Amino acid sequence: MIELGDIQDARSRIKGHVLSTPLVPSATLSEICGTPVALKLEHCQTTGSFKLRGATNAILRLTDGERARGVVAVSTGNHGRALSFAARAVGARATICMSRLVPENKLSEIRRLGADVRIIGESQDEAQEEVDRLVCEDRLVLLPPFDHPAIIAGQGTIGLEIIEAMPDVATVLVPVSGGGLAAGIATAIKAVRPQARIIGVSMARGAAMKASLDAGRPVQVEELRTLADALGGGIGLDNKLTLAMCQTLLDDFVLLSESEIAAGIRHAYENEREVLEGAGAVGIAALLAQKIAGLRGPIALVLSGRNIDMELHRRVVAGVNEPLEGVV
Image (cartoon, rainbow, N blue to C red; front, side, top):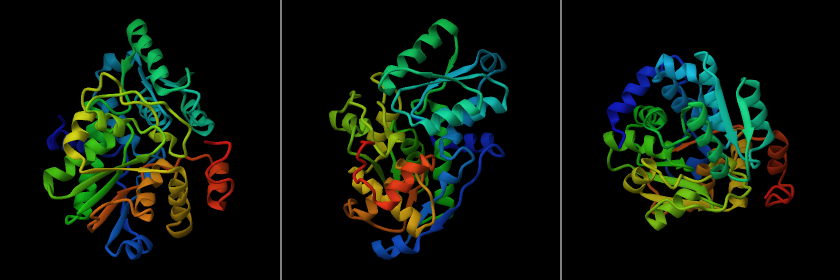
């Protein structure tokens, strides 16, 4: 398990390399919920998502020899972009393996950062097979998107910032895919405020962590197209950290329909003046859909990313072809 000290060390390590993002009040959501609600603007991070924290912490922990070998990871887009950015900053080569489900706008940004992009199969699990081959045959250093202590500790720095900005926080809503973000944030917050409730939020279409929590073991799910594409993919059948941490630290888990996620994106744009991808809007969507049982405030929710295709964003905001005809 990752501990508070690991997260504090990560914060010292990545300081100056990533942004400390603000926690800002939402007047509209506070009125809807009848309690203070604040938004953690992690979508304003340099690469457009929280992933830069974990990727930077992991890269900075490598030896010179490991950096010289190059790094490799599977990704649904945002981790690949963050790892490519962090690797380029230290002069390391990055190889990112992704499935055909990853949106083109995310692929082009990773290529722009100079990474070797490999498109493999129809799911993150299939792309992981190429990662495993590169680790074995080419000796690249594996830096996965979530199930890695340095990645989890880096993401946990968000929790430190939340608890400092809102010491009396009662509920934190966190998007969940493989669980690195939720595990890190929950570790940081519960170490200081154990009574705070940490609620995981994901899409109903293929939420691997929720299925694994229900089964009590890692399970594979069919990876489907979804507005919350950054939350797709499995947790790994050999998951070592994040499943156990989410079992211990998450107090509840909420799943959302595509139309509910679309409503979250629209609310963010129309009322908060923020552009969010589907994964970044699930916390807002959960509040709007009144999916949180026993909701208590103050509430903090993490806006985890903004890397949405802008044509898709325009369609969602305009309410065209709901629920995403031709996309889902």
